[in-house]
Image (cartoon, rainbow, N blue to C red; front, side, top):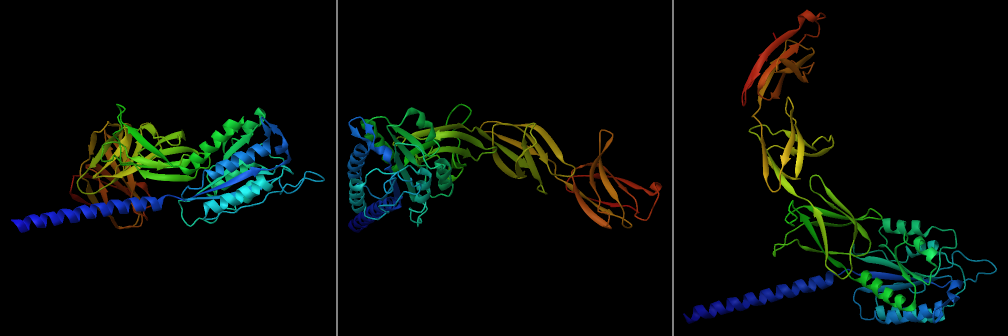
Length: 466
């Protein structure tokens, strides 16, 4: 009795140790898998930054606030930063330079070292030249190291007080960098801009208007929060009574601006009985495609950073069960009165479809067409067809021929015979048929040979045309 109790305690101790070890290992793995974020600060140092803005010169205020903000990043994990100003090397006169930009502080693994280097550069910068935003963004594409991990997030934060002045197209450059997967959608912070300028920046990236000094500081915090933090998302696939009960289907999240695939998740109801929580980057606008049959789309999805977002879509589904004994034909599934093929389903399978009415074209001989087949919420609609039979046709020689089924005292074409074959076997649905044949060398129609025959389920019928 004493031995047994001790053995039980040892087992429990070992179990507790293993459970603790597993939990610790999971947490460690989660920490290690957190993606690296690279942020490049693109800073306007053009001549217009000498302008006044509330309490002082734009350049002085921007330098001070960015310096203070950088200090708040010292202890942020998995973050690398770089600094590229423009308009700070070549004066406007005698001739402006539209290539005046330089990567002053490249990315490095030590965040504190880079913060110090950027602050030192900021102190030395004096506004001089023009505003080559497009060219600068183009150069940024080469500033980010080649990603060794597909989860690395490359982000540009552009701080500017003016528009492109070198006939470039910043919007096209930004879009090209995003489509190539070099960067995510940039952030643009406008300093004391004229209201007429605001619409010009929306196509470059997510635009924030710092209309005053206080808002500039707040915007920096908002932007960095979005840049560093992924956001939780719950996708509710609602049934017909608006309950999030639908599941087990893949969902694709596209960047709506570039069309790039950002995420694929198989929808899951978790152990709490609710749709599982996903982790999604809040940067950009998404289009979500739920790969039901037919697919369901939701566009214009914008996530609120730092909050639990719920995306709801109507995706009520039911089941279609196709049953047959023997041969297993394919079936073309279309929405009722729509000729576009949604799916091809084999018999003796069950598939889920969005609730509604469908037209079925069953690829038997002859074809079976069923219209307005109703798929109801969470119910199974069963379609069962008779087992097929077969006919083996023997011909005296080569020659054209065809098969017909008799329906309502009419002959309906089923298929043509192989004109070069002396014998062929054809699988047919039960029914009454006729075969019409003429030998190849017979040049008069009166030599047409006709045979009638009947097909029954599971049987083979021989037909001789001589």
